Amino acid sequence: MKARLIPSLLSIVTILLAGCMVGTNYVKPSTPMAPAFKEQASAPSQASDGWKLAQPGDQTPPGNWWEIYGDPQLNALEAQIDSTNQTLKIAEANYREARTAIRFNRSAEAPTIGVAPSISTVRDSANQPYFPPTQVNNGGGDFVLPVDLSWEIDLWGRIRRSVTAAKEQTQASAADMAAARLSLQAELAHDYFELRSADPEEKLLNETVQAYSRALGLAENRFEGGAAPKIGFSAGSHATGGCPGSRHRHYGATC
View 1: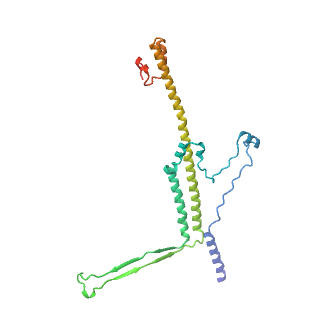
View 2: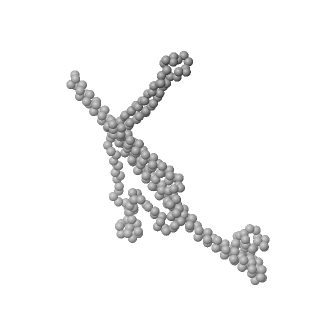
């Protein structure tokens, strides 16, 4: 009977131990790719058209890429993103939290020691009622120093897996922070150049208004001197669109 019971117990223990073991390491599955695409042109045509295959470089820091434009004002604005943008500060806080989680999970690999010392003293007063004076003493005291020691042996790899997961989460948080910083830098550069492109348009419109104003003044002088009919002066007045400050308001036009 005992000879049959021992193999059965060993089988049960083996099954329990196998159920508690940590699984294999994660391996990224391979993605099948097509050998070629019908849209892909030949190498000579790519060289002539200026196209080339993309070569991702996420691991390479982009650096101060906006300095290639040579604009000091843009450089000064880009330098303020890290210190003033709240979205980037949130991403940075998430990254620091993920790094802290690594140390937190790794601390479980070492033993934990805890102490809670306490000191107490008790003395009976001779002034309390119904207390015999002969029992008065100087009191007594206690000093307690309990020590608590605990250590979870990572037999099944739970702690190691939690540390690995925390490291992976830290890498993801670092990638999110880098993506947020690059997106903010690109958006700032785009908005800056949009604003700068509006400056020549504003200058052109101001010059156009000034040109119409000079033409209106010339038409007014010709009309007052009798060298041009009133219809010519009216056409110049309509061309200015009734701008404030133009002298055609003396002839009844409303601004």
